[in-house]
Length: 186
Length: 201
Image (cartoon, rainbow over all chains, first blue to last red; front, side, top):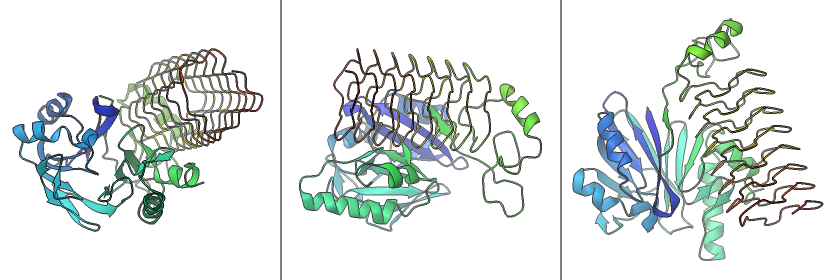
């Protein structure tokens, strides 16, 4: 597995690249900007962008889609059919996204947005703005906040403790760290 | 753009062991036959994104090493010299970092959550966006360090020295800063529910 983290300028958001070493097919998670470093990395490593997974429909996670789609031909997956003003494929809890020999599983993490989703791959999970290192995403109501915490407990904290948690902003973490020390849960 | 990670660890050769083998070995730390030889050979290896979970490198001289994106979860680095090391995106969660020297090191996006860094020196280190969730760092020296948007939520930082540190957007939510020195620290931080008893500001 090839893994790469990009910090993009739009609201200091994170973009992650995961690729299959054998087939060279790559997936991006969130795309606040089509930072030149991203196509440079793809081309420099002989990778084909097959998919973009959007955790939620906020500009700082989607603003790079138009530029990316002008250059490449990936399928855009999200919890909504259309994100960032571009058409995409709607996914729901339990759906699988395949690229090369890798398989990601969609997990439901609503709250920060109603259609918020996370993506689990072996050894890691991408949570967008649902779960941060030591924090959680902002919500619009107490009900949304409860919904978010409940789904994190049910779908993220039940993953193996040593799995990496890669978030929409700020540093990465592990499942065990967040389960045991995140102030919103402890 | 921060450092990259290349995840392709092999499984440990030991029968029944489901851990990954260390970079440059066929076994995990627990099942490594000749730890001394493996440790001696480290200096010649490319350790960028290395798998180093649970290793004992206590007291080692790793100053200036490139350990970007390495996975050092649960490692023992007690008293190690990591001054000037490149530790961007490095996983040090749950590691024993007591009395280690990180002065001038680059720890941007590093994960130190759950580690014990008591007595460690981070003087002048780059800890921007570092994960310090639940980190224990009694009496640690963060003077002059850059903690922009770092996340020491629930961290135990009793008696730690933050003088002249940059703490803009640092999230000290529920951290224990009892008797910490924050004099001269620059920036607006989040101290929600933090314990600031006896802290100097």
